[in-house]
Image (cartoon, rainbow, N blue to C red; front, side):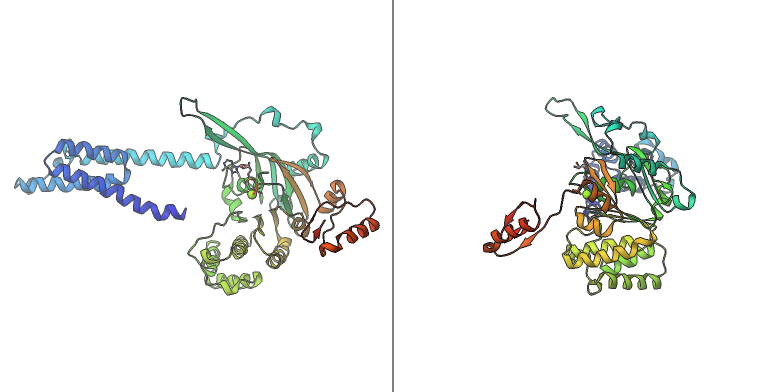
Length: 433
Ligand SMILES: Nc1ncnc2c1ncn2[C@@H]1O[C@H](COP(=O)(O)OP(=O)(O)OP(=O)(O)O)[C@@H](O)[C@H]1O
Ligand SMILES: [Mg+2]
């Protein structure tokens, strides 16, 4: 995005100046028909050129009149004559504006999954559909919880994900005589769960399970292919703006602005949330202190360590004091000490809100989440409190020991004696499990 911001103005200047120079030279060389033809070609193909090219032809009308010694005879008709190229250029620009506006609106509607495109939602292939009898009883119960009608007060503070699905479409083929076709990838396959106020829901799962896609759908970054979700009582399909106003989001990949400092980020987000300058400053200082990053207050985001960037991203999500907190792998890349600090902050913030966080670590989910859902291949496979999952699916405990290699056999014998049935799974570099 920042790259586009930097390159676009430069590209625009070149795309405008170069055709302009070509048209004026050809025109001045007394090849007016070629000059006009080039002008219309550039005006049609390069929208920013139209304005500067059009101005050239306005000035050209005046210059020609003054050379002919009749500047006083200039009338509106001098400009509107077809060979003056002023009106046709204006018409081309007008049509281009309408076309580009229509394209923006269509893309915006498609990104928000609105009516025009919702009808084109693909059917989930049969082999991906889950047979009712195969569904885990906890998942069925969770779906019923998510679909249940709630009193307004409760509904307006919770997250209810209802049969949410996300398909990515990719064009394949279309070259070397191959027919082009669209390949659909079902990243999220109809998940349902509910997160109430004061609850942190942990979304676990291997890489590519669909955790980020689920959160991106909840934040409106992606449109859902099927299903809906209610964030603080507002549908993400029909009512995204008020849903936005209630949520704080820490994305998986840094969305920081490279040349803004930590303090500037916090001040900017605070002001976007509508706080006064004084309140923003106070909150920013308190937040930095809380996360132990006050010494980096004036450091640009691009010069921060990965861990400090993650901490700042979590603080930005919290800056507006949101009712709903969504965090995608907030502790990724943090060292154990920094992780503890982050955990404390998350724990302190949970009581007043409903939250979803994704993680790869069962230890983290156990420490921070009231309930956990495990996703595999886009589907929620088990859900419950950490204790419930351990007792239902737990397969014993893992004991990790560090000792000099020479002591390993004795250690192994001792563990087997103390815990009959224990087995040595792994031994490497003075560490065994
Ligand atoms: N923009 C995209 N276009 C096409 N496929 C995508 C896109 N983003 C994600 N996917 C695919 O969707 C699936 C789910 O991806 P997602 O990023 O949601 O998983 P995840 O559980 O967050 O993984 P991780 O733990 O690695 O962050 C993956 O197979 C991924 O390759
Ligand atoms: Mg992810």
